[in-house]
Image 1 (cartoon, chains in turn purple, yellow):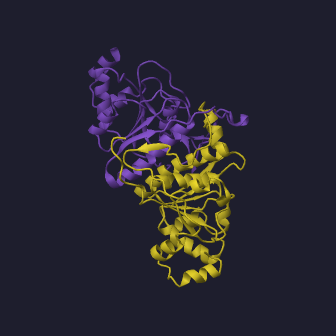
Image 2 (cartoon, rainbow over the protein chains, first blue to last red):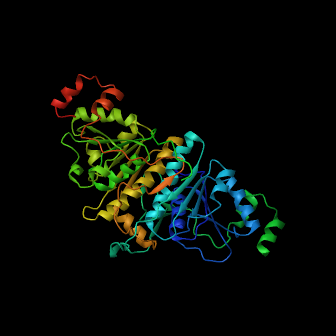
Image 3 (cartoon, chains in turn brown, green):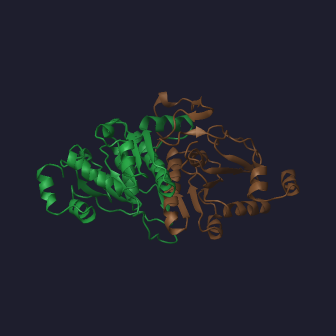
Length: 212
Length: 228
């Protein structure tokens, strides 16, 4: 089996922007347990959301907020969008938490910077025992660079020994080939895992949630 | 920022062998967050010293001169690897292997080492910066893990793949090159610091004699022999 750098690190992906979703996926590619939380509705993206568990509930409702705070207690990293007023509350509840806020947009620099920040914060936390808050800087203004035309291919994958390997990862690690452990989740595919296994909700409570 | 962070990543030591922008930028980002970055330059100086951005690319690093193409230089470098967490380089492929300093050899010296090898893009500064930032992210994640769980890694990054992957995912590429002295993110727990770039070999005595235990009398002899 591969040796994954972020084994046993739990990440909550609360973003809807592409950069945030990709930041969370980069951590998932490195072995983190990423739980993507989104309101009912919307569609998962095959490429941005693979290597994540999917859970649907609406954090803007009182019940959803309560569930999310209980997940925060069990997590190492939250990826959120800049300006989320709840960040301070999360950090108060869980001082080991690393809360990463990204500017809106779909800039690859924000996504990679967020992944870097998570790595540095994990390094720092081993010594201090405390996580903290990270704010990713918005990209400088200017017209975006479009890249080489021949680079605009879909992300191809190849299967070797039953492992789906990513052909063109951002980086290659000698001990941990970039691979897809989990396809992008169907909407709410892992509700039972998150709500029952992690949060200990009963079947009737879960049924009541889905009924709404 | 409500609280000014007081700590740095001083317990993370990076050896920067980069002779290209992508690697120098990756190491500069580590230096910005307070890691102990030692730029290892050939005695004639890093080829990037002629670049207009050198003072910003080298900001916050310590400079020593050491020719790892000499046997004595490699011996000293091997001692440095023992005290390092991460090595960043952007030589032509297999250059380190040819010097007997490939990943397998480095791992034999230090079990938990991370080696980050970047293939930049000679003619595209934006691609260099993108590769440098990717290298920084992969190195930070791997370094955390190497130290906690003793998993060494050889990280390989090419500017071309970084760009192609971003385009394939429908993400926007940067609008301009990194400014090199701008923090890509602010951390509440770790300060971003801006220190001046070092003079060539400024830290030879401090580091080689003071920290590595090289007898002070050896330094002039090594200098005369072209090793430092």
